Each structure stands twice: as structure tokens, then as C-alpha cells.
Image 1 (cartoon, rainbow, N blue to C red):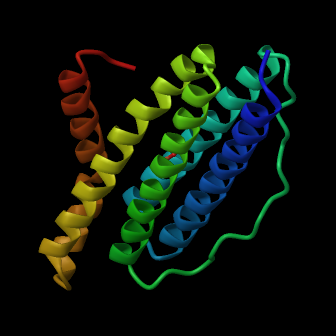
Image 2: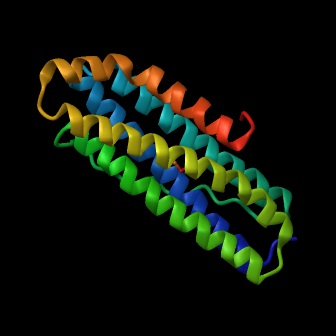
Image 3: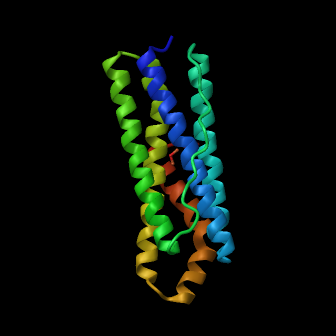
Length: 177
Ligand code: FEO
């Protein structure tokens, strides 16, 4: 059974994952209007992944005798300065999510809630992967600068870059997902 502290903290995380999904969905829609098809596909997929993170938490909270609360939708930003600024925002957002996950892990240790602690390890690994990918993309965009043809190739290569980073991280972790 979840303590009320664990339950309310997990519900806050549900809200953050839901917002992450909305945020990336908004970025995806903006990128689509800019003709950046692969960037937009990539961000639509990220938005789906965040929804899955939210769902996984809801189901866990319910399984443990709590109540996973579906939060209200908050309006994310709708326009972005550039592709680079989009991915800088993704990176900053993922860093914030990692901090929140670490905070949750700390709460479970204080409360000796080892079941939730164990459940959260999946999120700890996921955050390593998501931060690494966002950082890699931002670094690439810094190299490209304002070169239009570079941006064209970046758009084309985004899918394979995401797949490669995932497989590299899986190798380091010694497992797939
Ligand atoms: Fe679910 Fe990207 O954090």
C-alpha cells in the first residue's frame, strides 16, 4: 500500500509526464508547419513515449492501492524560435524530469518503500537515455549552426540518430527495453 506522501508525489510525476507529452506534441506540430518532417515525426514519437510514461505511473499507483489522477491539460508554448531552441528546451525539460525522478527515489528511500523504489529504477534508466539523446541532438545542431543544407541533412538523419543512441545506451546498460 502506498503512503499518502508517495501517492501524492507519484501523482505530481503523472502530471509532469502528461505535460511533457503535451509539450513535445506542440513542438511536433510546430515542426510540421515548418516542413521539418523527420523532426516532427521524432517529436510526435517523443510525445507518445511521454504519454506511456504517464500511463505506466497511473497503473502502478492504482495497483498499489492509490488513485492515479489524470491531470488537467496545461497549454504548452505553441511557437518556437528555431529547431535548435526546440531541442534545447527538450534537454532542459528532461534535466528537470530527471531531478523530479531523483526526488521521488529519495522519498521512497526515506519511507522504506522498496517496491516503489524498484519500480522507479526504470525511470532512472529512461532519463539517462532521454537526456543523452537530447544532448547529442543539441551538440549536432550547434555544429550545423545556420547552415541550411546542414539542417536538411539533420532532419533526414534524425531517425537513425535516435535509434543509434538508444542501441548504444542499451549496450552500456546491458539490456534492451
Ligand atoms: Fe518521461 Fe522524458 O521524461
